[in-house]
Image (tube, rainbow, N blue to C red; front, side, top):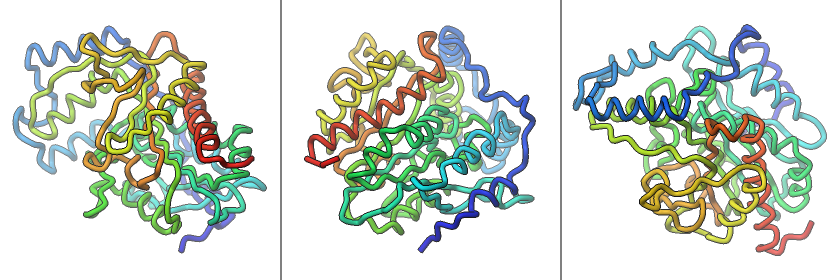
Length: 361
């Protein structure tokens, strides 16, 4: 079993390289108009992605070329995430290191992985998992998970349920503001149950969850963002990597969430939307009634077959699951608002579950 030692994070903090305080917290996002224009231009002119040969999947050398092009960090995992995890240790939370990512040969402690647990874990209580930063570039997924841990609602819920939070599943991607990991693999298409997970980040988190020994998870909420860079960079890069044609789509302006098509729990999803709309706006569908190519099933909700796509939210097989999607590039939403929207998503979801399941507080 994994040990929850009091010095884990401290050692990681001292081992992690310091960054200049002048390093930007995140790369300035492209404007909505400019990112849409870039995507449309690439599609219309068939302008190829700068790495690889159109129509041919990337070789290992081309994946290394991609990594070299994004290798310089834009922000600090140590300062923005690990320091906040360290500050949580105390009477309310346990902190557990569950692995590290071997992406820096000179420093194996460069990317340690941590989860935070409410105290007095009780196997007779229902258990909840919150994950953030599966896609490292999605800032509010990480910061929203940490903000939830610091909220009074978290400790209130902890009176009737066990809460586990993995705030930053992909720290290499967090520092570089990237969707993929260092091996050009999407961690959120890697939570395979019948084969070794393709991404190291997914494998480490699945190992942790298995070792916790929870027989039946009640809730799993996976915190994400949909950004303009999805269309201006990441979807074109994916098409190039896989040797496919890139077809542009519309970035939804606002919050939405993704339910499991095999277990949609519409009341649970509606509770999330109703809670988040008090903080930020809900994404409208496009002219075809779609959000990111999928028909909405109710306001702000689409469905995916989570297991088939090997998404993080499928990992636990929880009774209630949802993937949040905040839009940080909206001119009507600040970074702080996006973090609050993630907290509202979690709080709204858990309030619904407490009521629906008859849990006493």
